[in-house]
Length: 411
Image 1 (tube, rainbow, N blue to C red):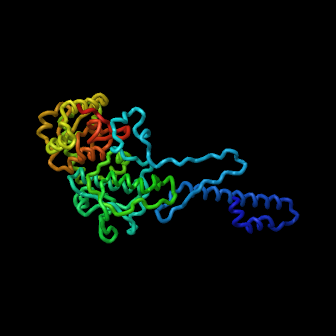
Image 2 (tube, helix red, strand yellow; image 1 turned 135 degrees about the vertical axis):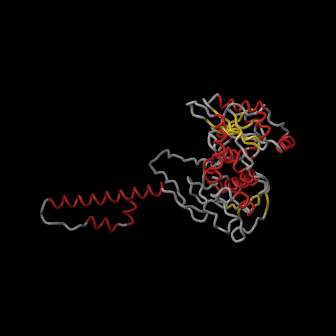
Image 3 (cartoon, rainbow, N blue to C red; image 1 turned 60 degrees about the vertical axis):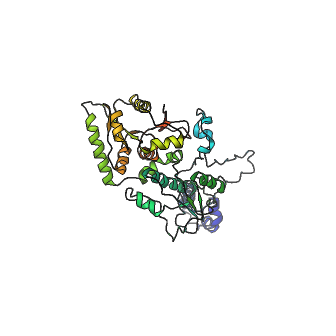
């Protein structure tokens, strides 16, 4: 109100010198009521303006942002309140909790987790800024992890990202809602350097000074990426992706025809275990990776293939929690699954199309996975709990206690 008075003194001067009326005693009372009404309306407008400024989100970019300052403490305030800004990344204790054995998780395996998700992505069309693109090697699970890793950089740091033409051709036909643009020479002229994903992530934190642009803080920060960079490895930062599960479930939704076929195949498999029970069925989808991964996990992680004891533990985990669980499997080795795991409440639901099989796996109420990015992505795009084999280290590293990412010791 004071600012309005200073800005428009003539308004209030005019209010103070309104012409007097005749000797009718009711006129001064009417004049006073008019002045009070004007004052109330001005105060209401001022309060409304303050609420709009603080509550309505603003479109922000690195080029134009409003900077908000704390009001200076009044002279008669002996002990002004000091506002300590919250750090943009969670601390190790906040993520893992006091009960997690931190000695089992080398610090290099756990990247800092951002507090502010999701962030506004308002720099994608500024072609003068550097950007990040990524390798498109590997199979379907790798490619989807690479896509999500790019989107993660975009959301955490607000930087420009682009997928190469090959990635668009390989996953675009199956997922119609992809939001990352394709690398073209007009706005994405090419990279100046290469990097591994973890190294780039840590450099972005360093280059941003440990500060991130966020909805909660509209200060002007420098653009954190210095040069256009090509990520050359196969990232899948699981624990960084977990907070964005709902977002990616929407963005990486399958074509309607794929989902229709997946539901039909899952329903056909579940018919073999349906009975006259009135209890609701809880469907747990299970992905079992074998074939090439048996050799890979031996020389890469020095681990033996998962034994039957892991699947017994994983199935019992749900049998103890639900009255009528049914396990629907897909695998790259269906013969082994049918010979070793099919039971009265365990069926095989997969086929020979990896995209449809992945859609089947997302339909479960909960999930059991083994190793590989394919199984993780399938369960990640679903709902409910994900049980995974815990080896106290690679290839699954969980850096915080999650309510739905459940480790289960494999042996």
